[in-house]
Amino acid sequence: MHITWLIEMTRHKMRRIVKLNDWQKLRVSLLGTWKTKRLESLSRLQCWLGNIANTTDRHLIIIHNYITALYRGGLKFNQLAAWHALIINEMVRRNLCKIK
Image (spheres, rainbow, N blue to C red):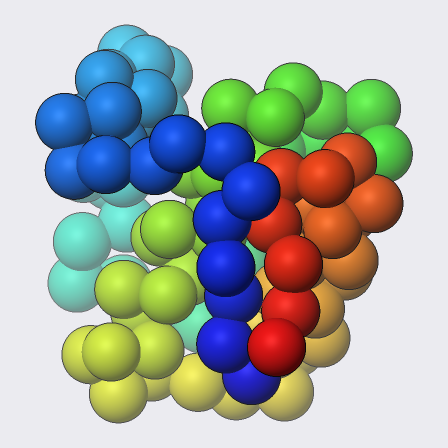
């Protein structure tokens, strides 16, 4: 699956998007936890995001970007993949991206 952004998404813009203090605190607190506490780490991400349908575009983009980085690092498990699919579907619904 390949995602194409329908909004302007540059590295510079992504750096601005992820600068939320509460996100940075969570991100740092999750370092080193994924291999031993996968479900707990996922639960903390889900709690931060809240209801997918009611969250902000910015929060969806942050979580999608983070999960993509986890995948690149070799971490992928069924619960994470299923949740990521829900996030991508919501992003498509909001016209933030499309799937090829």
